Image (cartoon, helix red, strand yellow):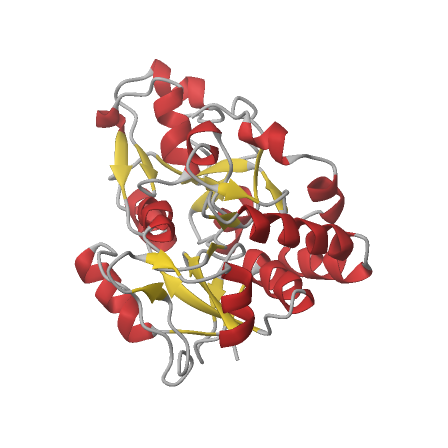
Length: 294
């Protein structure tokens, strides 16, 4: 059973992910998530996850990276890889908590979830706060623009060169950071809460483009909207599972089983299902992706 708590998702939207998400009834019976008064995990994290039988993961509900089915089942490229690795580690289930990208790292470090499994791309600032696994996904970035691309937007440089242009982004997302790193003024960004809202912003003329991973935009493709080829002036992006820095033993154990999974056809099957290249994920390292500026 891989479910997300929909009442809590609504709560997170209302409170900007300020409170602790509660799992489905009964899942925490007989075990404690934190040491009361300290807010710190009790015992070894992997031992706790094995004991309770599941790991709580932060997700964004952005296909193909993460997706919630109508019955509440959590799926998508990143959760499916994480679930496969955790099963090898003796943790049979995952439970998703939908939260905004900018809240994922603070929530992880506040022990609100155990792992970030949302396609949260590695870069210098994030790698300083999160202990990532080796890469699980490698991605490209594109713009969603009106059909015909009337403004000729094919790279970030074109946005920076024209102060009149507006680009929709998910706050705290990799694309938001890429624009800031390139020196695009904040006045040129339009914050949207989710993928569909970004497409609607372009349709309504509130934004000239929506900046998001190519595969995410392909899943949102709408009549009258065109997806540009991958943008060339943005560094290669990719993600791994994100852990607390203090969970070094858990990261090491996860990396061992991830490596073993990558050597099997199962890894290819998972990524192929969602449109990702398994070979691309095998061909890049955590250190390379963590060197990305931003």
